[in-house]
Length: 197
Image (cartoon, rainbow, N blue to C red; front, side, top):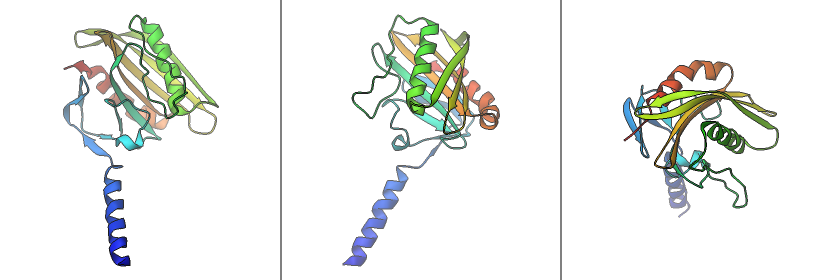
């Protein structure tokens, strides 16, 4: 009897481990929610259990691990909703409003990234807002910088646009300087390739 319990426990652990694994993304066009992105095949999709802060239809990709770099694809955020989910029901996450100007969307990303990295000794800033086309949609691209008191600092780049009163975002952040410099060009290529299906 104990042997059966041990085998069953091992089988359950193996199945649980499968849900925590990464899966290869691409190469070629990849769909995430209402977006399609062009991928070179060197990104790995994180299991949703590793990214509980992400919206249901969003994904997180990485090349060297989530603590070192992450590409967050956040499609179709409706008016009045947050970019991320919170584990705590009473946590006040900033929300998207359909009439936001590009600089307000940049500020929304800034205050939202603070929540993802963990409040407290975290300072996030955004800068360098510039126009960017995403297929037939006009949007914006900007830089992100995050200083953590108890971890590595991060740099990043984000791009997005609004269509039909919904916000579409792709955000890349990575530990600086090495991982950000290493993957910036690939991340910007994915961000720039974002199109509506």
